[in-house]
Length: 354
Image (tube, rainbow, N blue to C red; front, side):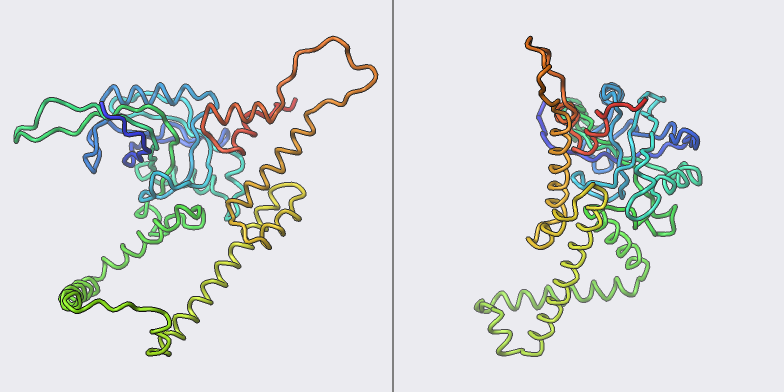
């Protein structure tokens, strides 16, 4: 058995039979994974694999995190947080679970994601799909096909990282729920939209094929010549108009990206308390959006840690007492055990208000 030691995003599972409980905000019985060989023939989910998904999913008391993504996003792309998948069970050749919507999904920066997903599940349950991200091993098989070829290995699920809900282009007129996608998911959605539109224009496809053929011929001719180093100085000297156009586009793109970075950091700081100074500092220092969020979280954790330390007074007990676990310590332990984000860990370990 070879240890893949890598993330693997499973095929999209669609099984119908989805029910939406609006009162409890639970999408019941959505398909997590289906028995069979994956589309890319990387491996096969058999009964053992399906049972492992059920077991691993139900081991996580808080539920397996679920995000909103796109069918073509990679295994490392992070979707927008949606809620937690619970109550994993077998339904014949399908593993099903219930998605408990998190209240934060109603108030994303781009709108009501929770309402969008519940509407999607109600309008066309067959189009409502999910995709797991797992850690896995391969179990190779000795048997062959009738043609003497190797059969795909069995997939042995070692860890269930997430169960992400994916939007379906056909169900949404090609819009893909675009506003709700995170920065790591949006490129795959935009590229899919472009390719779908492009491939629906046969004349465009023919033109591109002709261009590639000409390019291949010309490229072969160029490779026979002595290679000549092309520098920006050379372009500027010999093709000043082209240089000016490239430079102008570069400046415009740089300004646009810098504006987006600054606005996203300042918007995100409003989610936290008293973070305006840190947000301004992050913008001035050129910090990325991700690093700025980390600074917000660290500052929030620091405040929680200080608040959790009891003050010492003259009436303090002389005898040592058992140290109470702080919210921060509980959150860090939960994050270590469940592999989730700091924000999710803080939510999961917060004291329940009476």
